[in-house]
Amino acid sequence: MKSLKEEFIDSLTNGGMIDKIYGFAYKRCFSKSEAEELCQEIICEILLALTNEVNISNLNAYIWQIANNTYINHINENKRIRNQSYSYDDMPNTINAVYETNMEDDIIERIIDSERLAMIKQKMVSLPEIYRDVMVMYYLDELPMSEISKRLKIPVNRVKQRLFTAKNKIRKEVLAMSTTKTEQAPKLYDLIPVWCGGDLFKYDTRHKISSSLLRKNIIISCRKKAKTMQELSDEFHVQAAIMKDEIGQIPEDFLKKTSGGKYIANSVVIGVELQDKIDKMAAEITVDYFKEVKEYLLSIKDEIMQLPFINPPKSFEYFLWWYLPQFADVVKWAVAGKIASILQDKNVKFEERKATIFCTMLDPDDKTNVFKGKNHNGIWNVINMLGKNEEVRINNISISKYLPWEKGRFFAAQDFNSFPELAMVFKTIYGLDVNSVAESDKEAAAKALEKGYIKKENGKLYPCVTIAPENTNKQLSWLRHGTDEAGQVDKTNPITAIAEKYADKVATKLWDYFIDFLPDHLLFQCQDLAASVLHMEYYLIEEGLKDGILYALPETGCTEGIFATIHYPT
Image (cartoon, rainbow, N blue to C red; front, top):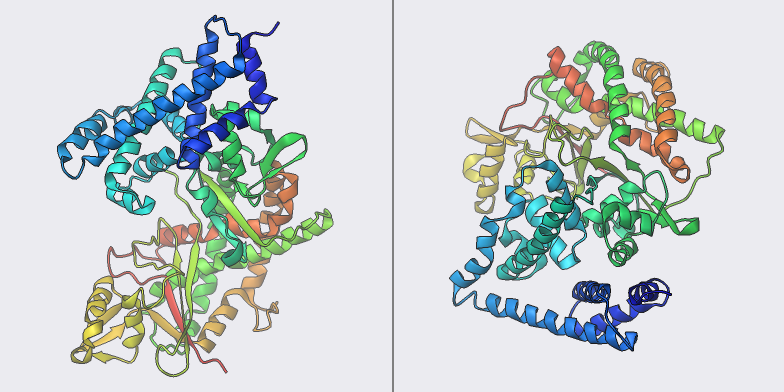
């Protein structure tokens, strides 16, 4: 004969009781997150009560009596916190006494033991959303409370409330875990989108996972092997109700349901082990590839420097900060072509997608780990910047270790209205007398001088950024990868033969890695993936610095790696 506790558990899993309790909570709460929290509290209280041997004639009535009592306690506790928080404006010391003294005694800030810190991170992801958000922003993103307040659009004192409540929950559970040592907290990783394709303006779903560390780690956990919801609940020590909700909020672009009620990643996750293998291979190959590229570049040095520029580069070495990393693309395109042939030979079925996102898995505890990928951002189609019906196009390379954002990089989403100091580059293109700078441009000009985008010579302002006409850019493109305007490869270009030589070896190894680390249903994306994971531009810069053909960048005034062109469309 089943015990009352077993009967209740059966009703949760098979009888729809969990939905009834959630419905009870949802009708009495102001938000979905609060309803989930109350639902968990009710279930825990019922299980605790049924653990004791009690005589109950009507289990159903007993359950709803506990539910009602738990709800009353819940609103009384919330009322107590609200009363304390509402006194914030009039009595600031009161709220500080309630919340900030706990922050000084913060278990998270005092823990050094990495195993217990992992427990805290694991418990953080299983908090209800309203508490998890502030914990993630405060501890993982290290944002000040004022910034959290702005992002969540709630008062600062409400941020303090949620931190206070969340930390108390975590403190109790972590201390219990430390005492019993029955749970081993799983390692948590970050998940960073590194390559995107398709119509992201309409179908970009990255924001639906970016704010949840648990959702990211569910995807990571399922990157190769399909898992059931229960397996994931057990792995992350998260209640089934929370796991069900978290999985439900992960878009199908990232996680899909398979046969047998299991879930598997539906977006390529570049795991740490996979990327390490590829980086090691790329580093080894680039040593020899750099030598051949350098020889080729020196052979065309005079040809490059004699091309018509509107604002020429300061030197050949300066220009190489933009030009050298581009030679990584020559090998990448050749490798992608080889991978495409393999996919065709293997009869891998292609799946059309509205948007494609690749993600890389990063270990937040590994301070030596550096993302080696290249961001190649551009500001395009800026019409009439010079008043001559022209299009201004600017692109820059950013690589976190060598060309970081802090050294004058810009984002593709920026424009000249939001980035006026960059606009000054083109306002000074033919020389601008210092005394004729418009009042509205003086602040932007000062910032542009400070950042090194422009320079002052003989009472005039000039750009420091390399600027070229469209035909010069086409010539540089041909010299770099040996293709004409129609995209046809020129077999006489020496760099084409060099790239093909390395591409055969690289493509074979990459395919072997992809077979080992990716689920079969994502292998069709390997052609694009090859270009995303092969960070040869990073190692070309590394070899260039070792060789001396590249110089160490200055701390300020860094326009290396930025190149602009002027187009006059017909």
